Length: 213
Length: 114
Image (cartoon, rainbow over all chains, first blue to last red; front, side, top):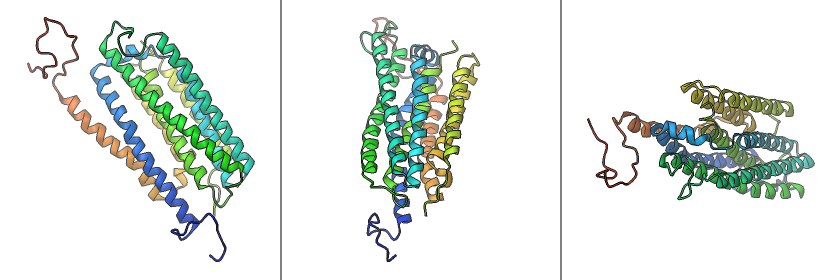
């Protein structure tokens, strides 16, 4: 205890306790995020239960290639994020920064693909409203309300994630983290994996349900 | 203090498993399996989520308190969805949205009972 530990705040007894508190904090935040997205998921379930055929028919208009590609991109970005945290455990600064930059690059790639997809969606009149394609079938329109709201909210989380990861990457590059203290890196990683998990569910619900028809 | 819980090799293995599951769910969606399409897609998503939570998010190597926090949101969501669906699944008839037309009376009337 006599040793000076600059990263240890005075309200904590030990670095381990401090780390545990931070991790509990981010998990509590992620629980609120589960409820945040959870409302949309429950809404989707209720209306898909009411209009199963319209939802399946509408989902066929989404672009499966873009959706699958983006799933693979996000899953891979989760890998590079986990590798960055793994490097953090060893205090390997270069590896942290390299893997964080890869994660940011993949996140940006996700947004680019999503952008192409959105522009195609707009072109194909998949936006609910007066120009909606299916002669204004309100049940198919409902599917696309969920599509835009859920993917839009998810994309917002990806954008915020890029901001967080860039901050952490620049701090890591300046040597702020070492094997004894890399909690912010770990916490940012937990957030990023959560964003990945949301997409893991969005992909089958929005892209896959009508494919066999 | 920070004994590394996961090896780099195991992280790559988890990634390979995730991409395999993605290929499986993509493939399964192309066949008409009726209700099983949804079941298979959701089971595979559940497996992917579990892999990410246990290994990438390191919950497998975390304290029991973290386990409780990690489960809390999902358990609460299960209650949410169960209570919502007990309503929707037990209603005898849900009147779908109808376009406004002079012949349809009472727009948005409550569910008709036979």
